[in-house]
Amino acid sequence: MQRKVRVRFAPSPTGPLHIGGVRTALYNYLFARQNGGDMLLRIEDTDSQRFVPGAEQYIIDSLAWLGIKIDEGVGHGGPHGPYRQSERRDIYREYTRRLLDDGKAYIAFDTPEELEAARAATPNFQYDASTRMNMRNSLSLPAEEVKRLLDAGEKYVVRFKVEPGRDVVVDDLIRGKVTINSSVLDDKVLYKSADDLPTYHLANIVDDHLMEITHVIRGEEWLPSAPLHVLLYEAFGWTDTAPRFVHLPLLLKPDGKGKLSKRDGDRLGFPVFPLEWHDPKTGAISAGYRESGYLPEAVVNFLALLGWNPGDDSEIMSVDELISRFDLAHCSKSGAKFDFEKGKWFNHKYLQEISDERLAEMFKPVMREHGVNPDDFSDEYIARAVGMVKGRINFVRDLWDHARFFFVAPETYDEKAVKKRWSEQMPEIMNELIGVLADLPSWKSAEAEPVVLQWIADKGYHLGNVMNAFRLTVVGECKGPHMFDITELMGPEETIRRISRGIETIKPQ
Image (cartoon, rainbow, N blue to C red; front, side, top):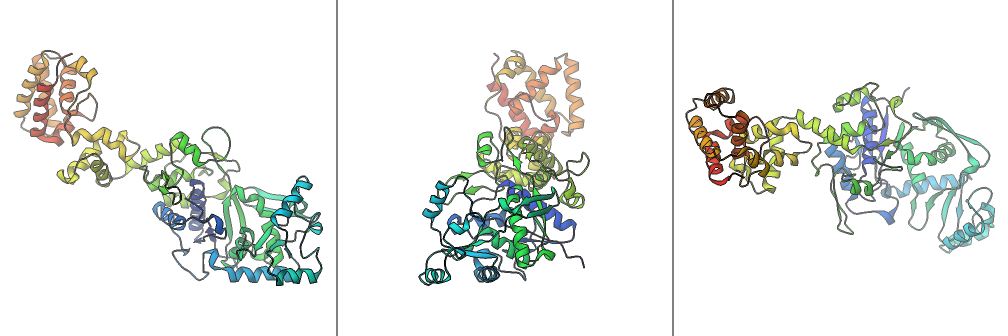
């Protein structure tokens, strides 16, 4: 019988969730949903020295903001809990003992100083079949000495006993069959008595088995550990239920070589975390995609195409489309350059698709930041204003530069425009325009425009100069949406008031 697809996202709470980790979570989610499976959230917090307060909740909040829905795990519960590894000590002790009893692992008492001495004495030292008998462990020491050390409370680790000289095959759904000879593997530490916790290698295998994980989709950086994990599945007799491996390509720097890092974001001015992060130790604040004005749908779409393609030129895809089209066979083996400018493009595209009403609500906090009370304007007014200029923006915050004149009358005027468009005669012409506007039967754009244009033609005025001077008094500069769309929204009182102020304030240059 075919097993139900079950995947897990298993981050460590050692800091903010990196955008590479977000992509890993996204690919797990897309794969699970396409196959009618479940996605688990497991927190791998066995490294107590690196635990950072607040990091776990940050991970949960980040996934929620992105719409990556968890079926089971931390914050959601389920039949395979607990889902924090620090709460599963008893389970790991049991499986550690099982490996020891079966002769698949051994106890090592080597101190950090002894290990350092071994590395100094032997170039490229590796704790393995060729060196283990020269070290202090339960394979090289008499049983009585081992018992004495344990009874005395000597700190120890449990190492996996790797048998040399055999080919270990890792069957990866992206990279195919990868064969590694076991002689190059070291006897990895599986458990440390000092903190009574397993290392990643043991906890990962035990949890994936007990939580019935069918596919392990993780970053390429974990590929070197895959042969050991294959051997561990064999050691426990779990080869029939072992999950399939999927090692995703790295996210690479936008320029140069190497893996994408926070320093790249700081250097080039883009976030590498989904949400803003406040470091509890240093107080430093790191930018997040949410706070930088990205829509979660845009971030998801952007990340999905970093290392995967739908098989054609499609770019803008909803989550449902991504789920229906996601195919691991279309994942790249090589790293994907992190094109942050493309991320801005995706955000621009998604902003164009959302309603003006939703955009207006998103713009209100920006208005407040600039000292404008949104309550002074109707929701319809704000929505129509942002709707006129949203085609020019990449982020909601950009709306202020393009739409502020709708909410704040200009107090200064673009000098270049004044010099080019404001002649000695222009105050008189603008006064005439006020009279024309005051007599308009309708302020609807389509009805007001031909009346004004006809007046300009009848008077023999220069169309460009008059219309740009008109715009200059209302907007403060010679750019913006269609002029009569602006005046229709502002209405006669505000429009005429601004023209009058311009006549009084602007001086020919």
